[in-house]
Amino acid sequence: MKREFRKIPSQAWGRPMEMLVYGDKGKPMMVFPSQEGRFFDYENFGMIDTLAPFIEAGKLQVYCVDSLDHESWFSKAHPADRARRANDYDHAIVNDVVPHILADGHKNAGIITHGCSFGAFHTVNFFLKHPESFDFGIALSGCYDIGFTLDGFFNQDVYYNNPIMFSRDLSDPKIVKKLQNNLLIVCSGQGAWEEWIGEARILCQNLHENDIPVLLDLWGFDVNHDWPWWKKMITYFLEKMDKSGFLTSQHRMKPKEREKFLKNFHSI
Image 1 (cartoon, rainbow, N blue to C red):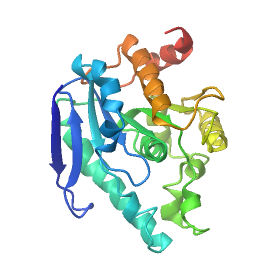
Image 2: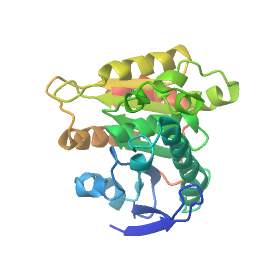
Image 3: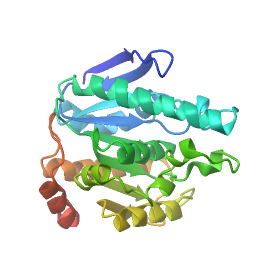
Image 4: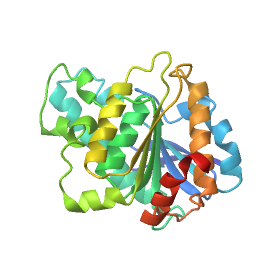
């Protein structure tokens, strides 16, 4: 398959953002690394090999972006500075990386946002805050309350980067309408190290109460917080998306498609 290293200039990031891109057409998918991870981790853990059939068939183009966790949520800076640096990351992704992806053969497309563990936190955060860019989210085994990194500190920057909080209060009708056209999948096992199922339930309940389409898919008690299971999960969901005709370069989720997908999900 085609594999390309890229650097995207970013003033907010403060240096070029590094990424790896796999494939040359198909539905664009942005992958966030796990906690304090790097853009090459997804490949190193075998996930690109798992997705190779979709990539080589021209159904999926994967953009593995870098993280800034070590300078934001998991840095030793004051919590206010951590949240501000997280806003820099948000700005870099939305204003630098997203336009780069759309110009890469995906005009008018919606981008899948995806990640595992702490990458799932980023998945949900970006999906909910930027529905104009991301039409499909696949969050695997994530935590959704960023408070655990902040020692009780709270301000507006924290609030707007904390999905379990701001998902309760979605009130902007423009944002809500855009989210109602999209679809978020929140999936987790219930086995070893799966510590955030309660957060997943609360998040999804908040979204349901705001009429935001979300699918909570909890796997068995033998399903652990680990890469072998995430390989099975992402393949499972992408196969359903493929059968539904979603994996094309310029595809954007339509309300009728979403409704049909959810209605027939278990039989697809």
